[in-house]
Length: 158
Ligand SMILES: [Zn+2]
Ligand SMILES: [Zn+2]
Image (cartoon, rainbow, N blue to C red; front, top):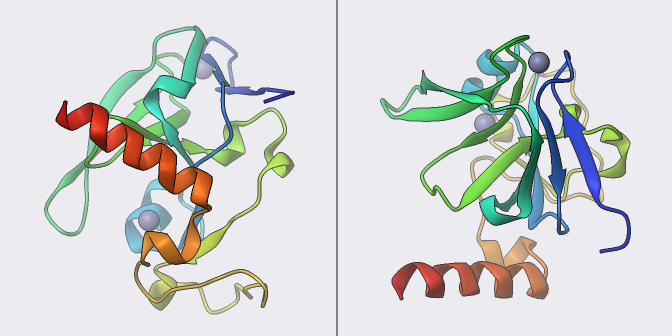
């Protein structure tokens, strides 16, 4: 990748760099994301944990309850408490909050998910796939991204 993406928290103590392209960029309209962000949706850059290079600071991990009874690990700056990324089921994947990128406009959603709870005043672009709940990866991800995830699964099973 030519120009790597960097980002960080508000106070500047946590800084990170994404060393590869996102696997996929989610715009999630679920109620967990709305509650966590205090906004109408979350924009998550999904990428392998190995490709999130911590440049400075050490985010601390907060277990955040979700409506389904599970918890999600949110990584926050210990100083300003801004959430820079989170982890769901898989430790091998990070969901980087796009708004913490130095250039948030450098990414845009590949897919809108959980639109069943979308705020009624949010209008979705007609040319981006949108799903009431979730989707089948083969229908949305690029071949390259699917191959990267398959490789990750293979490493996990090894
Ligand atoms: Zn901070
Ligand atoms: Zn969500």
